[in-house]
Length: 555
Image 1: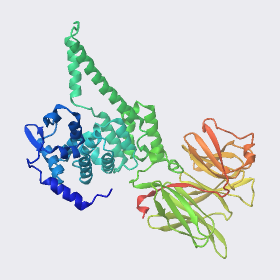
Image 2 (image 1 turned 90 degrees about the vertical axis):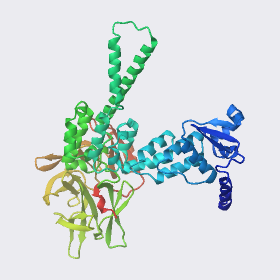
Image 3 (image 1 turned 180 degrees about the horizontal axis):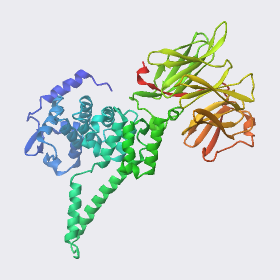
Image 4 (image 1 turned 180 degrees about the vertical axis):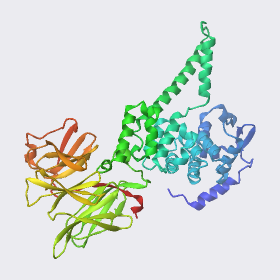
């Protein structure tokens, strides 16, 4: 039903004439020592509380008077002014009191007005009070709005007593959020430490001393009065609850799985490694050591991101996936990146219409492409700078054969190719991005064509279409490939492979021969608890290239 604005305004003007007018008043509300003459029809129309009272047949309805507690006379007078005149009486000074009273008297439209006022006037001065009352009255809309404000002002929030008093579930929800905005992940860890060390209430320690004294004074005496027993039992229970709560907080801190430990500064990691709570927990100690390794060894930052290495949505860097997009009608090759926050980033175009592949080393992006001229076909390595939309030519490739696969390992990337169409062995050239030099490695048994690679924990693995699985290793100043096992015995066209926990998922073209392969492995002891074979009707290869870029690259 459509409500005409002019009609509604006219009704409000009519009721306003009876504001503070004794004419036709038929009900009295006592607030403290002040009596307010009111009109039952208006109270019943606006307040569910008064409507229920008038219909109840209780003595207040019969005597036409009622006493309202827990509301000040100033607050009740402001509410009456709103009911009679429609005036906006809300201010930063009275909105909390009116909000509480509106819930007590069950005035839906006034509750909504208070909620909208809170959202409109939200600031660092009042957001905690707004959040408390919104939680009290289960105002989901305001809770969500204030929570977003907290996430955007985390560093300020971390300094408040309200944060120190938060429940475990709320703290975990806060620090796990991708939308948490903080100047550094170090700040999150330091805030957690303060939260763990904070005692819920100052009087709790005094309470504990009082109970100990109470027990001492009554030592050896038979307690006859049940009130003493009740006092001791209830207060001991409160102390035990506090201690248990502290233990829960310490356990969650020592877990550290909810923090971004791989993004912490070296100084913060060193502090944590010496902290008693961390040293008492093997899980926490292992987490810190893994974070040190992740930071010190470049290979840990390529190919996959552990949970502790995921940048937040406002972080300095962005976790992205790179895709090479080639349009046959265009002279250039388009390179795009898709961030985990669902933003597209356009990287510099690559000139040329032939083969191109992308490889990432830490936060740098390299492209290997064919440079086709009338006189020769050369291959070159380019470094892409997404901030300035430029490319830097690094070097030529030391061979002209078609590239089959490229993968990264520490500061190197390895290029695999078949020499002279020899399918029995794959040639490998290794490029050192720090020295800008090439090195030829020992040939790899089996074909280079169709091979794929993946990361798992601290290792880089290579997989060939014939089922051979290799692991890349460092030996002195060289790189070697070590044969591990054979997953299957037939030839299977691969799309790629990914790992999740201790499982490896291998994607490939649908194959009846693979299904009948009696030598197909389902696990690899000590490395993969399960090997999952996933088949697709699609025969075209698809590549997912993870990388980390500066947020400045986004436009």
